[in-house]
Image (cartoon, rainbow, N blue to C red):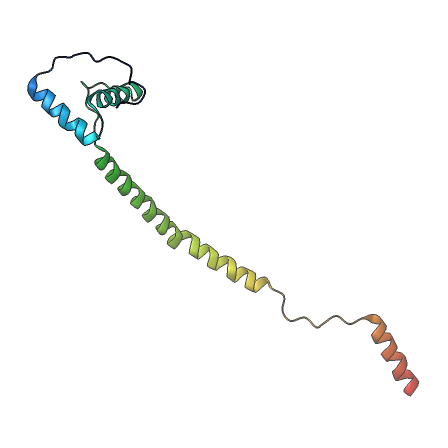
Length: 125
């Protein structure tokens, strides 16, 4: 039974027999009663502002293929940018930082130690 519409009465609408057969087959495919199928169709047209007289345009399948092609093109552009710009720039930056690193400097020695060693050397003389 149609949930929410159990207490409503039925009314008749006249259709051509071929159209009625086609609609019943569509309702079975949708898994709903004829009333609920018609309600879903009306809701679809109203919420999407689509007129049955107008063509929707490309199907979902063709739109999906177009999107996949564009995504592939974007990926190709990003890969090319990585090869031609990012990797060389990173290599140059690394070489600059390697050159900028200080060479091995002698370790810092405290002055106290040097002063004490100097006194010890003078005392020994």
